[in-house]
Amino acid sequence: MLLSLGVLAVGATLYFLWDNWWVNWDGGFYLDLGQSLRRGEGLTLPDGSLATFRGPGYPGLFALGWTVLDVSAKTAIWLSRAVLLSTGVVVTYVVSRKGSLIAGALAGLAAIVPALVLESGGWYFVPDGLASALILGSIAVVLTERIPSGVGSTLVVGVLCGAAVLSKETAVLYIPVVLLLLWVRLGQDRKAVSRGLGVFLISLSATVGAWVWWLVVAGGPDVQPVGLSLETVI
View 1 (cartoon, helix red, strand yellow):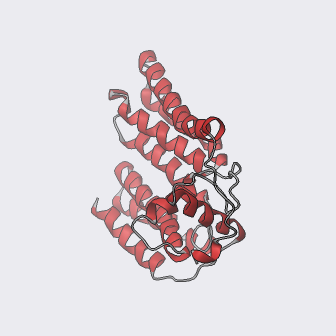
View 2: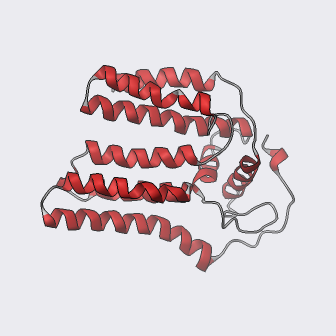
């Protein structure tokens, strides 16, 4: 735990003292969608149309953060970087649990540094970091919790994977990896395998399905066009 806090402190220093970022084209849409979610208008663009081609996870992160932070692009990039920072902390925790403390520290720092170089989620707005963090979180639960002892941990794994898909649809490509690890952890007990995989698939489907139901059946709110609002959050 202390090691994870140390990596967190180093990463926070690197991320939050580094004031170099910009709003990319997609980022403008995510900021607007975050504003719509925060106002209770659903996943709608400034013209009132539903953003069916973008998941709610990443703008939802901004909407949630803006309940306590100033509504601005700068606080949004802080939130995006906080997600990247959590990835390093989770890596540190998992590796140190399964290996040495030194390996955990190096692995955690190695997970943090690329965001400073590759820009994704650190310099501009993309949902990949959030989706990766959620998938990594599900893997961490599978590797470190007592999965065979009950359904609670497996339920969490399914919800995390579902949230990852809602953040970035390509996260579905990594779900087979989580399933394989879950299968190995459940062991040779057929009942445990059936129960665990069943809970995983149900919780994943429920997480994604709840949003799809709202989007398709319930529909979006009747929002009047308000014009582009990006300038209000920069």
